[in-house]
Image (cartoon, rainbow, N blue to C red; front, side, top):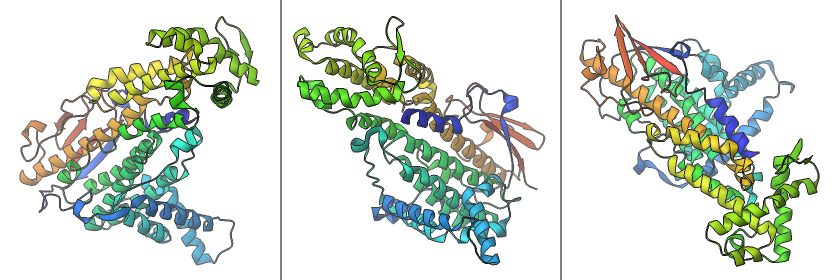
Amino acid sequence: MRSAFACAICALMLFSSAIADDNLRLVKLTISPAGMPVPAIRYRLTPITRDLRPGNAAALYYRAYIEFQSIEKQLDPRLPSEATFKDRLEAARQASDGIWLDQSIREFPLEQAKLGLSLWSTPLNEVALGATRSQAIWDLPLREGGVATLLPEIQGMRSLARLVALQAKIEIAEGRFNEAAHTLTTLLRLNQQVSESGTLISSLVGIACDGIALNEVEEWIDSPNSPNLYWALTALPNPPIDISIGLESEHSWITADIPYLDLIENSVLSDEQSRELLKRISGFLEMAFSEGTVELPGGVKLPGTSELSQLLPMLATYPSAKRELIARGRSADEVERMPVAQVVVLRWVQEYRDMLDEMIVWGPQPFAESAGALADLDERSMDVGKHPSGHLAALLLPAVGAARRAEVRLQQRVAFLRVIEALRLYAASHGGGLPASLDEIREVPVPLDPVSNEPFIYELKGQTATLRAKSAQATILDQRYEIMVRK
């Protein structure tokens, strides 16, 4: 089930929002004072609009993924190869697996990583070209394929993102910051264009890959003599990945799976059309009740395998669906003339769209204002299947609260890094010292925590500063920073 898959991605990316301070992951950074570059965004993380070329980035990303798959087949350890080439293949496998991305640049094997990455030059070049294109038209067949639409290319972008991130890590390790900035721009551009491909799953993939990119921004900040990225981070889209596009696309999924959708809403179906609707909608019921039993109103249970047991719950909701349609303004005569299947499915569609529209409205609002409403929507989504008209909503509604937390978690992380870069600016003009409070920073605006819309908590004890969100309950990012200035 697609909605369950989207929830699974969220579960991999998120921890509970109520995290005890003692359990926050500690990130230790040793920073070098760094003044403002000239120009201020000399090291960009976003492309310059005038440098973008006409063309479709998605076509180049597709080419990159096809080439990635072709190379991946050569990495089968069971295939015979010369000893020297075998070492290169093993290094290439490790590069594509992303195992070096979890190691700091002080620990990871630089030369082995360079050897492994060399085999992936063709897909990396295709991705870099794609990031220079002005638009990305993915043309995913959502309206034609519905919930059965497969998205292997979107999931495949994770593999490409790991390779680009490794390239940036190598460049940072070697102090090649111009090249690293260009590579990070490529990665962030890829992630943003993937996120806009038209599904909520795409948005979540983009968010996950942006997390990979920001790991390398942390490596940049932690590296000796690294340039300041305050304005480069400030110039990123806010939020970096916007889930609103993905939420809007959720309306498209049902068009392929429910025939005569416009007719259902605006006229009375014929007997033939009603039979086709029953046949197609049984596929939804099979998804929901393929295991265990089907429970009818009144506590009557039937085996959840036969077509009859799939249709009976649907027919059982007919009386309540009639009443609800009339209460929503349909004439009693029109509703009486509708086939049973049309009455029931129309109410299913209305319930689904009503809740989805609420999610779309609340999704873009500031998190401090919308957190309660989003939690309520998630709770209602879990229970909507108990409502006679909630079967379609139970099958397809996304966990919007979890998706929004993923979005704001990324937004919060960028804000954290902007604060740290503001500290580096301060240190550069104050003899390498850190401020006693964030209020002392006058060089640039200090961002607020986008979760609470309040200042971050900053404490200086001796030579070490800590940075965290205002409270464990408010934090979405499961970490705090411990910062020292390099001597």
